[in-house]
Length: 290
Image 1: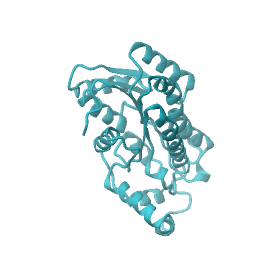
Image 2: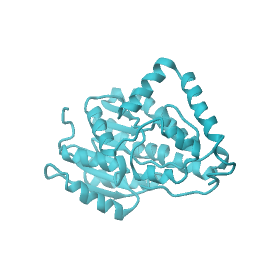
Image 3: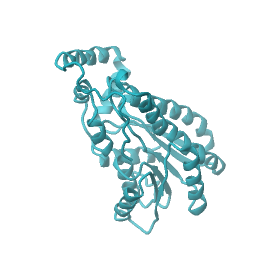
Image 4: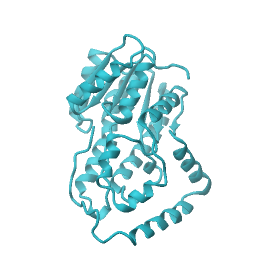
């Protein structure tokens, strides 16, 4: 892998845990200067210590406590970052949340929460930084989607819809920014062993649990390794893990009808064994992990 990260400034949202933290550590080992954004300062400080331990040379590890879903707050934080440090060379949008549940049981607050962080959180960060990248004539942008961003399933009406929005945004950005020398990548990881996954496991309907068994589980370090390698090779679509690569290939070859029949059969079978009203978390808004 060509090392495009050495002495480059890499900004990672959601960089205090999960995939974001794993990416930050991996980029630090490759000699990058790191800035991570998350909400909780205590978690950020712990992440900073962990990233510093991974550095291969004397580079900076900067932490920023900010909410990506607050446009004014994130714009001010990034303005300060550019002034104090430098415009990032690589921006990796890892901040994300999810709260599964049947559509009719979920409050609209949960739909809004998913869109504000997963979609608008990505938009706000890029609106603050892309103009500078265009003036500079270079940069790399990486947006994180999900397997349910290419084929949504039972229980993820809120989360999957927000990731479909990220996909659409990223696809158009690739075309708009390429003439300006800016590379755009879309990462679609499989289920990954992160604090977010632990959070959502508390609220998954029984049907969603059964459907999740179809795919495997990746560790964040494995996702980060494929992400960093894919970006360095200039790839637009990055599919970490064999399961998501297999799903993507089958969807392209056979379309969705085959999967609909297979997944509908799992839904039907599971619903026959789940008592009415089980997993009823409707209307309970929960604040997810950084």
